[in-house]
Image (cartoon, rainbow, N blue to C red; front, side, top):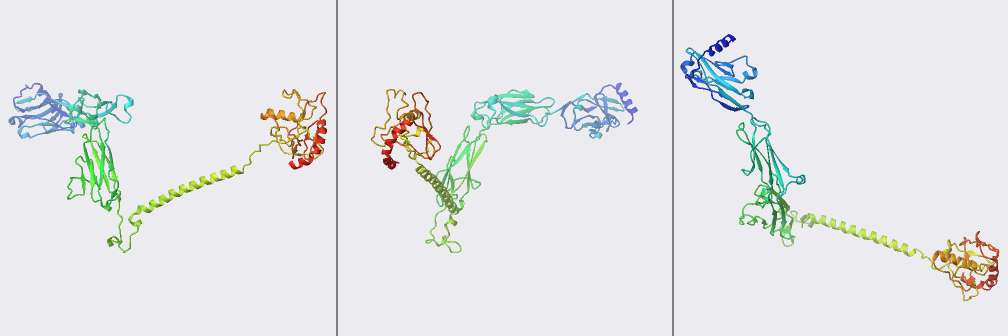
Length: 534
């Protein structure tokens, strides 16, 4: 249809009186959701529709003429519009597919016939937009940062948050616990704080989002308190022996309480307690299970105990049967022989026994080896300590007053503090004559024994005890090095000090000449005795 025809129709409608008496069905206000299909219905009298011209318009813009869509429309709009209905009965319905937000507006159905034309009342089409598919979203937050570690416990406060984005109009949100509303209605976001109790363990808190654009409300849920039951299987009998009975106990605890206990034997659920047909019996409270007439082939068969709470939290524990086989006396029971007629070995009947023996031997051998090693260390330490020479509790025998032309033998002592004066006889004439000032340190350096007393003074300061003077002439015995070399300070009263050098040592032996002459006569008389002593 050309543009002249559209102009003629528009001009005619300006002067057309609005008479709706011939409309059998007029379009009504409707609401649809984006993406759905909307149908605006329009039906006129059959006599008027025979030679009439029909058209649809939206906001004073023509959409169709009879069954044809106006070509001047945008392609995205034109492909979604169609005129449907039985024209023979006067039906001219407008069908809009894949509704968009822009399709909302006021629609009018009109016709022009031989006797004139008529226009329907405007029908308003409202387009609803649902929330985005991933919404609503539920979160559970701790009231404080300390509570958000490993989950919540009874007594703590949980913040339940629900968020919905998108939609026209926006969705309304409300929190529910077991279909009971626990919060007020909010739009876009809802936050509800709850102090958790033991009865909340395993309970799901649901956020429900409702909107006119949703045929069914959308929901999300969180479980803030989730403490699983604790389960442990314990064998009540000492051991599981072939042919005997064994009882197992399912120790369980849950919050707020244990809802149900279920036993599984070899992967199958244990049902009923018919002792005539079953060897497995459970107690009335399902906490105990007894297996009668245990068989050897049931070794390592798993036994499982599953515990659940009234809110659906579930936990389980598994234990394998350790069946101890009976010893078979082959001399009395020929059926216990092996298929080849031989007596079965103990390793065949008890394959774990050989491994146990090996483990025991290894442990005992390790302990014995450790003990032998420790004993060897202690023995070596004892021998080394026994062979270590003890330090002699004697001191070097030195008498610098008894020096003559005889051969001097020097011992290799290092410090004067190691000199020891031993008593060689009852002769007390050889003792040095002490003066009144001896104890105060004023000793006559010209008297015999001056050098000996000087050594004794040095030794007393170093070691804290005084030397013992011998009653017989004492001759110093050295081998290679002298003990010390002391040069007393010279004074007008002192005689010159004459050093004597040993034939076996390059170090001089210090002593005054008068002391040497005085002790020469005594030394010759006791030379025989000294030779025996040294």
